[in-house]
Amino acid sequence: MRIAIYPGSFDPLTNGHLDVVQRAAKLFDRVIVAVAKNESKHALFTLAERVAMVKKAVADLPNVEADSFDCLLVEYVVARKARAIVRGLRAVSDFEFEFQLALMNRKLEENVETIFMMPKDTYTFLSSRIVKEIARLGGDVSQFVPPNVQIALQKKLKPAKK
Image (cartoon, rainbow, N blue to C red):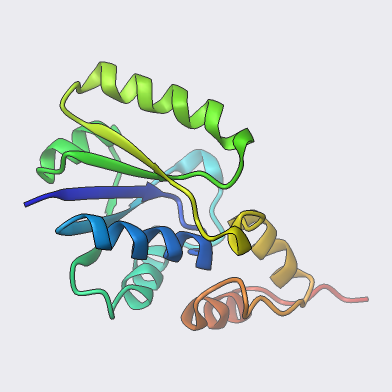
């Protein structure tokens, strides 16, 4: 079975992330969306909330599951018996950092490959940070995130007073 891990903080999951998941699901037998526990990032949503949002957003994809991890990514990949890490690239500016990560992961575990995927061009500008800022200021994020994530953002954030 060809298993791929799509790691990230997903704070929150965007339609760009979801597009990469859907594309990866066509290429692999199983895709695990692995939500990273990263204390240094000061996430808006808890790890449990992020995993729950991902689970709901991918519920219609039978070969996709959501999980979390708090170890080295390659250790998690090996533990889940996966062979590939899927990484999304929005722009050329993402490539240098992602390339360095891929080389380090290969050095740590030579049997794990990194696959770079681009989302649809309509999502290349999209990031979780931008979505949170729009939502924080009371803007409409419905075209940028799955419906369950939009609801979660509305509950979590109060629009700024003008």
